[in-house]
Amino acid sequence: MTAELFDTHAHLTDPKIAADLEAVLERAWSAGVRSMVVVGYDLPSSEETVRLAARYPGQLYPAVGLHPHEADTAWADVLPRLRELAAAPEVVAIGELGLDAYRGWSSEANQRRLLEAQLQLALDVRKPVCVHSRAAETAILPQLEAFAKAAAAAGLPLPGVMHCFGGTLSEARPFVELGYLISIAGPVTYPRNDRTRELAAGLPARSLVIETDTPYLPPQGMRGQRNEPAYIVETARAVAAARGELLSEVARVTTENARRLVAASLAGAAAR
Ligand SMILES: [Zn+2]
Ligand SMILES: [Zn+2]
Image 1 (cartoon, rainbow, N blue to C red):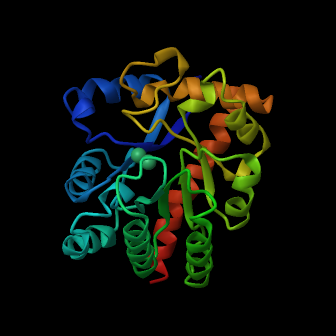
Image 2 (image 1 turned 120 degrees about the vertical axis):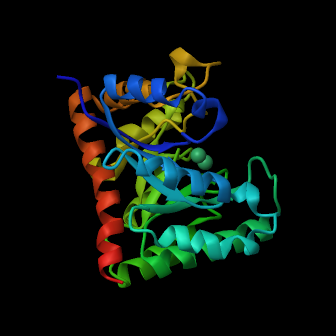
Image 3 (image 1 turned 45 degrees about the horizontal axis):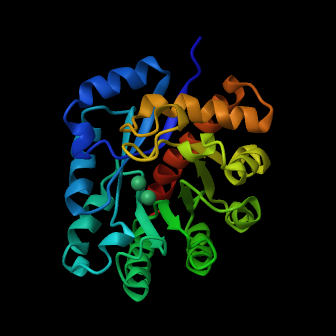
């Protein structure tokens, strides 16, 4: 039997994927991927994730949000519409949101304001967050700590997921303690990336999820190509090797954890 896998971060509305989406999905199902979170990064992609996921109930789950790269735009104008989307019952998370000190495509002050506005929105609708944190693992901790505590007090069972976590195992620990899931992506397969293999090896099973970040970050065997959800198998294998576990075990725990993320949005909405 093929292992059942859950891709917690895929941009299926990206033009590189949208052109042959049906074939991409067919390959994903054949590879054992049963579910995916489809992630928005601006208002149009967020609208599109909700429309797309509605065609695949129980398989595609939408997340809506504004990427830190959007922080210098007039984002306050689109927040009311984002709020409407966020409140829709099928939307499982707010994101991707966060801080990106690596690209620096928008000012840090604006990134923090945009992050704060969306954390408040997530709290209002009581849904977990999907966090993009690049070269910002220490900088983002205080805001995510405050969010996790407020979310728990508001009845949300799980604060969210740290997508494509690029930090070390010790940088991951405070997020794990706050209840965040830590998502491992294709870079865990890169020959020189011992840091992410140590992270994958050391995380508690209950905190571990996997993703592709389609169409970005293809695993080692597909480098230079467009990434797609079917390739998550290579990432799952690398995680299994790092942990000294069977692929089936990694598939089981990561899928179970991803389902807890989906369940959290329902539980949070019920507590509203
Ligand atoms: Zn991201
Ligand atoms: Zn992304």
